[in-house]
Image 1 (cartoon, one colour):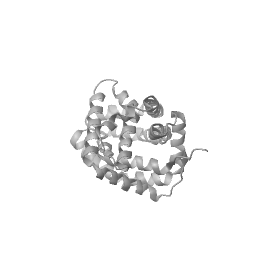
Image 2: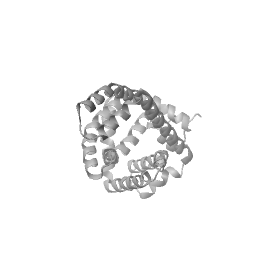
Image 3: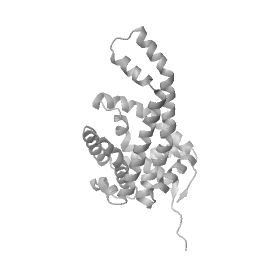
Image 4: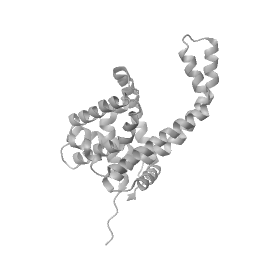
Length: 251
């Protein structure tokens, strides 16, 4: 694969072209993602079954981007695309889910190690009820360590997020093995950090608004991401096709 370095304006282009793909069949996009949302909530209500959601996320993401490819080629978006990620390179995609799960575990481990007793102190303070001068002093004393803990957690998980950003599509569409896909995704993100920043910044406003609406309606902290996903998923496919170009086969 050839990894292109694009200018910052492409970050906005990914969103507009992703929105255009969504508008070609908004009904099916919303229904497909609604089914995934309900299914993930049911699994997460079962102890330890939430781990399965993380492991299988790359499979479902591959299937949804397969649907985005179909729309880009003038084909209809069908229910069967939910299963596409289980029909091709399924094991490699699950491996990517395992890497993501491991990254989040390491993030939590690093954060709790750095935070020490500060996190439990704040939780105990908040659960005690009325706010007093003592509880306020305890929260202020714990705040610096919690900020450091958050920074360390981001430092651990950010490379993992960049490595799995494009990896499911590289595995699914281009038959790249998991390790090479993770490295290629990481390098592709680093080479295109400016358009990625534009992309993320452009999403922040809608994401904050939709998160407030989603939490009010469903009481789910990630509801904003799900409400935005009908545009996020096709825009992710657009960005992948923009960054990665298949090299011609040697004669």
